[in-house]
Structures are given as structure tokens and as C-alpha cells.
Amino acid sequence: MVFKIRIDVDTSLLDAKIKNMEAKLRQRLVNALELRGEVANTMMRWLAPYLTGYLYEHIDYFVNPEELFVEFHADAPYAAFPEFGTVKQRAQPYFRPPFWVAYFKLLEDIKNVIEETWNE
Image (cartoon, rainbow, N blue to C red; front, side, top):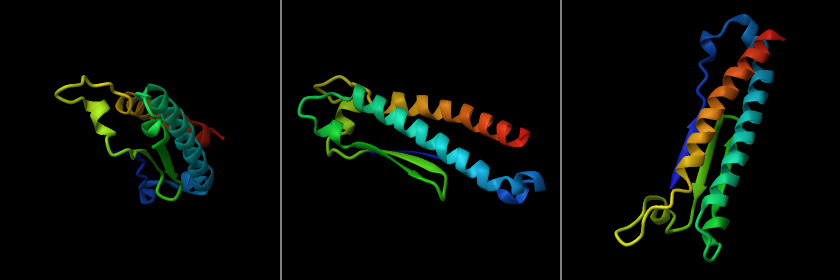
């Protein structure tokens, strides 16, 4: 199970001021992705059912600074069962709630990063 948040930037539409600040803007966006990735990963691990610890140990995230995305993984073979439930077990969402929190916080972060970089 993999969920991904990607930031697409079309640099051809940016004016000269933003082009001059592209490296600074990119680094700040990477920092925001790292922060939200770490927070969401911690929340996912905290919410995951913990019987053997296998699921807990196989929840992770990856930030790609070149393509500006953060990717969350739950690599346990049964990761979807507690998240979505089964016929015999109710769902115990641990993955999607922190993902959506990270998504909306990241939108705020992107807005703030762009405003801060523009106003420097």
C-alpha cells in the first residue's frame, strides 16, 4: 500500500524573481516535505495495531528532493487488512488519517514557503 503527495512546479510559468529564488524555494519545499513526512510517519506508527510489531516496523516514508514528493509505505503483507477491515475484523485506520493531515498541513506549508520566499 503506497500513498504519494507530489508537488508539480511548471518553471516555464514563473517570472524572473521566482526563477532567481528557485534553489531557496526548492530547499524550503523539501524541508516542508521532510517535516510532514516525519510527523505523518510517527502518527501512522502510533495508530497502527501493535501485536507483533511487524506492521510498526514496516511503516516508513521517503522524500524525493529532485521530484518534490513524499511517499508513505506500509510494506507488511497484511497492511491493508487493519486499515480497511475484513469480514471478521472492523477497520482500524492508521494510514489514511495521518496521510490526510500531512496533505492539508503541507498545503499550508507550501503557501507559507512561497510567501516567505517571495517577500525576502
